[in-house]
Image (cartoon, rainbow, N blue to C red; front, side, top):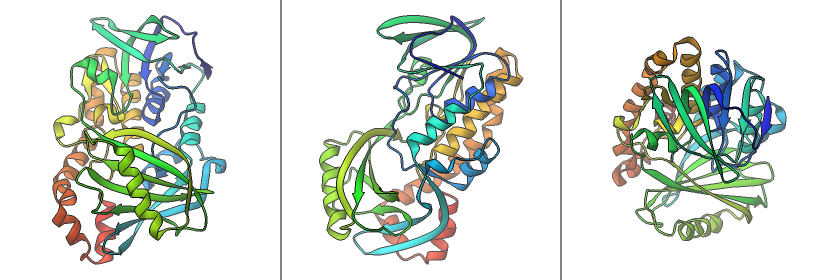
Length: 364
C-alpha cells in the first residue's frame, strides 16, 4: 500500500471517496478487479467523534479479515451496554457487549490492511464528478489545485455530509450534532458503555454516553439537527455528570462532528448509474442505536464485491441486491424509533424488567 499526499494517476478502475471503515472495505474488495484510488479529505490518521465500540457483528466481520491488534484495545477490554435514566437513578445493564478500541488507531489499522494496488491519498477533498456512458470523471483538490481522475465506478463512502451523495442529486440526510470530551480519569468507572437520558438539557438533547477507555473516559452527547450553541449544552451536560461522577477529571480534548439522522426508508440510497454509496453516505446506519461501524463495513464490502464481480454498468444492481437485507433491517428499526424518542417511551422504559430491556437492546 502507498500513502501519499499528492501523487496519483489519471485513471483507476475504482475511485473510493472516504478512508473510514466503509471506504476501506470497498477498496479492499474492489481491488480484486483492478487498481483503486482512495481519496480522504482529512489528514491521516484522523480523529472521529465516536465511542470506538465494536459490537459482535463488527467483531465477527473483522475476524474474517485479520486479528485485531492488542495495542489498540483499551481498558476495560470489554464493556456492556447499560441504559441509564439519569434523573430517576435507573440503571439497566444488558448482555450487549462491545470490544473497547481506540477509534483513531482502528481506522489507521484498517487502512494498513489494503493491498498494494490500492493508492491512498489524504487531504484531498472531492469537489464533484460527472458521469457518462464510459464511467466517471472525478474532480479532486490537492494543495489548492484541481485534478481530474477517470474511473469505471465511484464509491461514495464520505460520511453523513457526503459530497458524492449531494452531487448525485439525492439530497443530504439531516444530521445530529455530536460532541465528545476526553476526560482524565480520577478513579475507576464501572465497565459499562452507558447510554444516558436526562431531561434538564432541553428538547434539542438526544442522549449522552460514557465509556472508560484506559486513562481517560469518553463523554459524548448527541443533539438533534439545527441545535444552537451545542458546546454550551455539552458544558451543561458535563456539569451535571461531574456532580455525581467525580471520576471525570479535567477535559483534555473535545471533538465535534455530525452523525446521520435517518428518519425514513427513503434516506437509504444505494447510488445511481456508475456511482455506489456506502456507509453513512448511503444512509446505512442504525437509526435506533446510532451504531454505524458494522453497517459501514458490511455495506462497503458489498459495494466492493459488486464492483469486483460485475461489469461497471451492472455493479449498482448487484450492490442493491446485496444490501437489500440491510435496508430491511433499517426499516424495522425505524418502526421503533418514535416510541424510543418520545417522552413517554423513555419514561416507560424505566419500568420494563431489566432482562426484557437487555433482550430488546440486542435488536436495536
